[in-house]
Image (cartoon, rainbow, N blue to C red):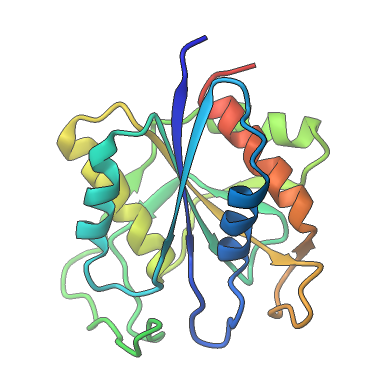
Length: 205
């Protein structure tokens, strides 16, 4: 069976989120990935900052992974919130982890629909595995959306065959001081959900 190369990213802490669930998930993958048949996994942690995001993602995509899953925390996520599009919007209301705020946008907001993934099939697979998941058309106005926007644009500009998606996570149940949010999920369930996503997007099993 042909091997599928998958890159999963998470974000480090930001603002009042001292422990980012996406970073904990990525670190857990590194420790516990059992070598799913046919999937070669790489991970990377990103700073939750706007600066140099396009350049950093450009470097990560130089390896031309078959699959790119960007993950981040959202207080609005009640389960695995799968983003189907990104926008050029960066809100001036919230500073990044370095304290920098974008300037108000002068140009109309642009939208980029992700057509690299069969999203309905993905949600069906997760729900069949007993994992709460749903599709979203709003990746927000923060660094998560900013990273997704650049990733999709880079893939299109370079003509890559990489299938990419952004996964917003709820808080983790086991955290001693979980951030306040719409939902909670055990870390093991998140890890199982991500393995399901990788299998489906890699079209394996």
